[in-house]
Amino acid sequence: LPFVPSNLPGAMTMDKPTTYKDATTYNNFYEFGTDKADPAKYAHTLSTQPWTVEIEGLVKKPGRYALEDLMKWGDMQERIYRLRCVEGWSMVIPWIGYSLSDLIRRVEPQPGAKFVEFVTQADPKTMRGVRGGALDWPYVEGLRMDEAMHPLSLLAFGMYGEIMPKQNGAPLRLVVPWKYGFKSAKSLVKIRFVDKQPLSSWEKAAPQEYGFYSNVNPLVDHPRWSQATERRIGEDGLLAKKRKTLMFNGYEPQVGQLYAGMDLKKFF
Amino acid sequence: MTVRAALRHPAAWWALLSLGLLPLAWLVLQTLQDQLGANPAEALIRATGDWTLRSLCVVLAVSPLRTWLGWPELLRFRRMLGLLVFAYASVHLLCYAWFDMGFDLADTLQDLFKRPFIWLGFSAFVILLALAATSFNRAVRWLGGRRWQMLHRGVYAVAVLAVLHFWWMRAGKQDFAEVLVYAGVLAGLLGWRVWRGLRR
Image (cartoon, rainbow over all chains, first blue to last red; front, side, top):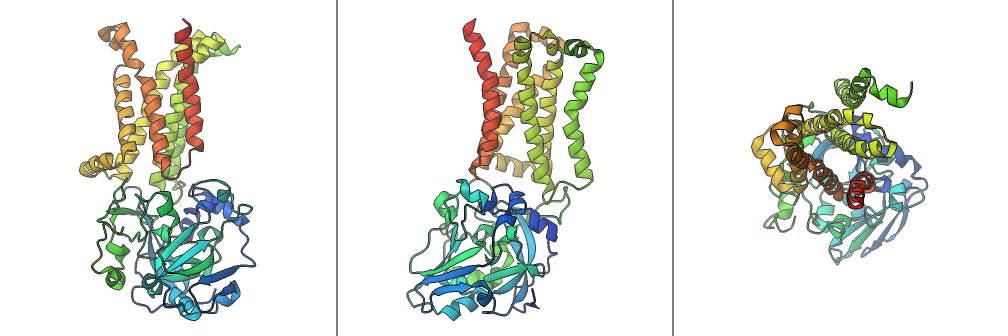
């Protein structure tokens, strides 16, 4: 997959990238099972060709767009982002894609569109986890319009110089680096522009544990565990201390103003 | 040689002990060769937890098997098998305290408070510790046979706590298939004791 390095502020972390092997064998993608080894084992059944994405709701250019066309809507850039999972581990991934805002501008949202909802593939025939009841399928995520328009919000089509591996959310996924990993929905099939805050899948499953925002925040613990520290996969040896989790996963200079004046304990 | 004669052979005890320690040796080897995947700490904590549960099933199967098959020879392995449960539970706790908590007492106490399933597992370990500490012959004499037996029935509580600990850990992912297997086996083994107690 051809690309140029991104020159966007904050888009190229200096942290050492996680190995390709770790990033493609340790995944949460419940559509293929809840064990972290499941996606690498079972995602090969996912069929990504042909693939279309439906754009609907409060938007001037709705429609069903082919993946090949979507890939031309922005300049492919490499961006090296930190990824912090809500479970307390983290990775550093070199993604390839373009800012979600490029797509949003092209389809021209109407003034009433305040949120963007992302619906992901849920095919029981090719995704064995969808046959089980770990979550209500399809998996749904959402962003506030200003979050979706932030240049760091990435629509990713590849990683490590290659097209996106299936276990990582082929053929296209969201990457929102200042939020917990589950906000970055995989294998997108619908992008919907709406006036009300969407109900995301994890919020629906456990509202007391997962909020709409889910910004990485070391000061707001998960009800069942601390979020103050994280284990960086692969980098630290077995005996190394965990590292301290950074506010907004270290992207506070870029995204802090989106949440100015908000009580982040309440809007967790 | 019949199975019963083999069980009576002095080498049988050592053979069984070696078999029981094989998973631990395998884990150590995998750790040294860096074959535990992307998150070795998590892999070690989970594997030692699994082996604690498995050895618990084995030791609780001794009495039903002994009665059912009419093989009193099995009794001579029971203490060793019980200590094996304690050994795996100790390594499990050690892995958690070391790799997950970095031996930080304040963090560990906070975690114990934040995650009730850790508290459950820890309670089970405390009971196992009491059983292991009174597992030698002279402890039976000190405590008196009846009291010793009462204390060692604590292993039934350990079985219940261990399943709850596992169930609660998996509750976040709503993935109970494996938990139900252990719950079923242990319920059967405890149920047999209840059934037998009632019949007498």
